[in-house]
Image 1 (cartoon, one colour):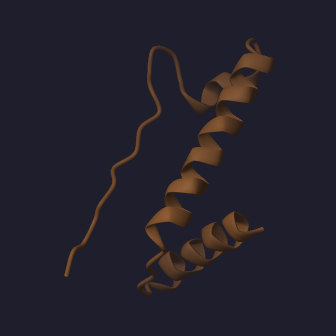
Image 2 (tube, one colour):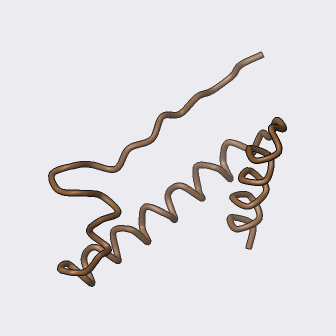
Image 3 (cartoon, rainbow, N blue to C red):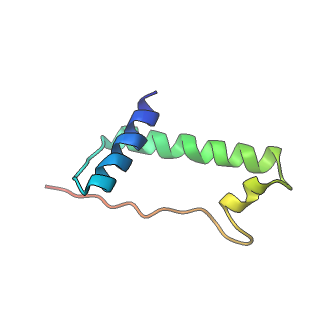
Amino acid sequence: MAHETLIHRADAAVTAGAAYEAAPDLAADAIDEWLQIVRFAQETYPGDAANELRGAGRSIFWLERATFG
């Protein structure tokens, strides 16, 4: 439930143009869980639309921005 709350709150903040900062360990755990779900879908349904999550010959990646104060 914490991951769902994190994602929906971040989405709402972006939509509203508001700042939102998540705890780094929770954000990393949410990304890790999402990647496990994507991997499961791609391995379980190899000919299915789940492959569109990645695209032909492409890798899933994200850009991490960290701020240190």
